[in-house]
Image 1 (cartoon, each protein chain N blue to C red):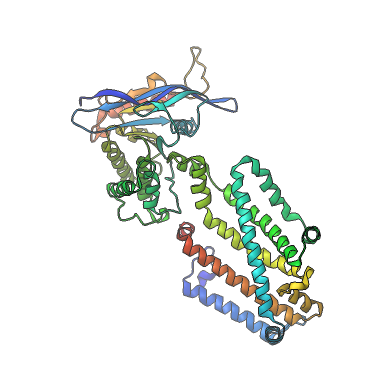
Image 2 (image 1 turned 90 degrees about the horizontal axis):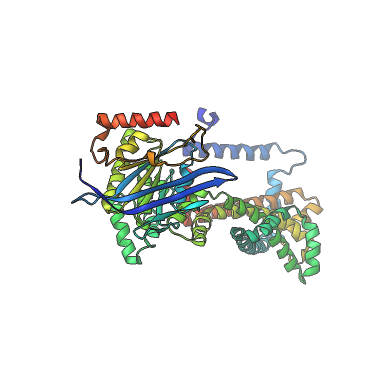
Amino acid sequence: MTPYFHKEPVLTLEGVSMSYQGEVVLRDISAQVLNVVRPNMTQGQVVGFYGRSGIGKSVLCRIIAGLTAPATGTVRVGEEQHPVQPGDVGLVQQRYPLFNHRTLADNLLLAAARKHEPEAAKREVAAYLERFRLDQHGKKFPAQLSGGQRQRAAIAQQLLCSDHLILLDEPFSGLDVAMIDEVKKIILEVTTMDELNTVVIVSHDIATTTALSDTLWLMGYERDTAGQLLPGATISKNHQYDLAGMGLAWHPNVEAEPEFNRFVEQLKDEIRAA
Amino acid sequence: MKELFAPNAQPSRPVFATMVGAQLLVLVLLWAFYPLQLFPSLGDVLRALSDLVTSQGLIQELWASMTTALQALTIGTALALAISYLTALPFFRPIAYAATKMRYLTLTGLTFFMALLLSTGHQVKLSVLVFATTVYLVTGMTSVILTTTREEMDHARTLGLGEWRSFWEVVVLGKLDLMLEVVRQNFAIIWTMITLVETLYQSEGGIGLLLYKQNRYLHLDGVLAIQLVILATGAAQDYVFGLLRRVFFPHAALTAAS
């Protein structure tokens, strides 16, 4: 097994609950993402976050991104573990929104200007355009970009201004095999850019998400001792998997390994049973 | 040829241009050779147009109306933009809502009140046009603002832009091209109103007054000539607005095409 150890927390959810019009959507979610350190390597972490449709994944995403305040509980981010504010956590939404009235370079510059002086921001943008293989497209408007280019641009934009933590909402949805491989590459690229870079993948694609992640969160409903479903989805301790500890992370072709497939099948069974 | 009658077909540019040219030619030929009993012939209309230009100052009257229309449009657009953008603040939403409903007020009744409040005919004319333009523009502009999605605003917020800056980026800058489109569409309304207002305040002339006189003396050829001039002016205006949109908002055409 690859040697690794955990250091400081990069994301902490403490007793997060949310209700809408009296209906409990999320219930008492507590989870933490720690900085995973691998000797002689600079690599951030990937957290897979799986939940069935309509369970409240998007609500939790908005809470983690600081766009909605939870009814109870807190979300803390960064090295100082301060309460999350909008802009602390990048959120790449499903349709990769960009400002359509700005060129790609201007879109990135707007994000970079949050952390850098104008000249430094321009240098950062040029570096990101090159790193994300978009340097030929800086003067194009978002409507002129392909789906893949747009996705890379949206990720680059969020990375330029967030504090290492980025949420990808359904990044594999509606993509073909080649495009899924492309997205995987981007995610790995992002995690290797900085030790603290943390990508949270919110997805329906449990196999692909698990294959990429060091940690997996399974969101679902719990039952009380009498067997009755409790209102509101949660991520129980039993459903927070340390895939690195299980020997299922950082393998180049983990999806071909029998242990991985057994684990995915076990997860599917749990989801069906819930 | 078949594609011209196929649903959702995209004929080539030359084919489409030829089709439009042919349709216009048929229309002109029908008008020239088969005049309806009550409808003036093409020759009569052209003669009336020549007479209106040479002896009745059609061009000057058109210019007078156009400057008034542009003045009203400029003031109305500024007011409507202010009212619409202020809907970001809940306090101003009832004002915008009330403004949209004022479309139903009649111009004649409004003119009476304006006449009591203002001293000159020009002021009355302009204020009525500004009022009417503003209420129509506010209706269109608030509809554009309402198309803003949570996804768009969330995107701006995740970049650390504050609420006002997000509003500026997403709603103001992001939808400026659509606002220009609303202005273009509503400019036509000014032309329908200006002819009415000019007949109520005749001291400054204008194409509306000229039209009124032609109507009054049953000069149908003159009426039609003026209507065609207004139509051509409107088409030219539409073209200019389209040009402005292409020059200042090149992304708009891309988004529409995609």
